[in-house]
Image (spheres, rainbow, N blue to C red):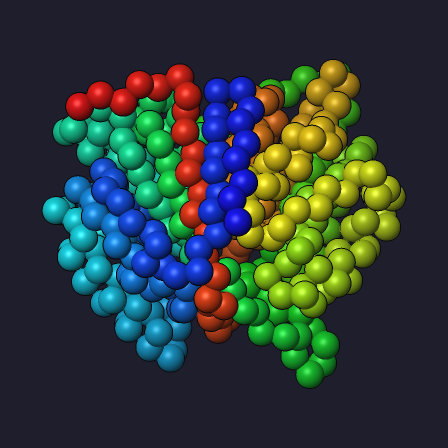
Length: 338
């Protein structure tokens, strides 16, 4: 399964992989994040090699020893595939400080090789804030020639016996803009939200309600990773759709795992009205759908892309389902040189 799409100066290609070993090649830099989520170690079966690796180890841990186990596996893997490994650590909710540290290291690496980088990122357990900023600023400031993202699909736990949905995060969400994706703002215009939706619909509704946009459109994950997931997502977001009277014509459907296919679907449907509205993209759905909105915002330049920063991250046991994706993003205006 392959999808290719080009918009403005960007070209993207997505490929569905049946085996992680199909992920191979030489890159300048590899970035990943450890987690209690079992998907964080899927990439360790790949056949890539890199000059530099930056594994991220967030300070929050689980009481089952999963982080202890996975941290060791990831660090060992990075040291095996990379000529140099630069671990960074910090609080998962302190995204601005963590991003500053990551960004500084990326720029140092670029300066050492004297050319734009080929970067590969495992986005399976990396928060959207970081890979969004890498894509946006990497392309905008020229430190990246090509960005490849790897993603492992997941099997999610069902709702508990009280029919309460799983919560990946605790407390409330605060929507903050991703660096490089600040967009444009005109106080004379109305407010429009394009929202990618997932299982945590009640938190998505709170964020949207606080912003109180005049209009809302939806990026909906259908097909899902499992045939039951679209109905589950719809049930959890029915109140949002009802409150903002979102018509079917403003619901864009795309495969939950195909970031480039979702980007293409957004471009074909073109739900934005830039002449009369300030445009905000809210990333509340799958990681690939967030990447799709990031790419569309990069191409259009005027949307703001928002990351839901939580008060805390909850330990939820998630396992890979054995299906994987590779997304390649190229800036067609940049010439790579040695």
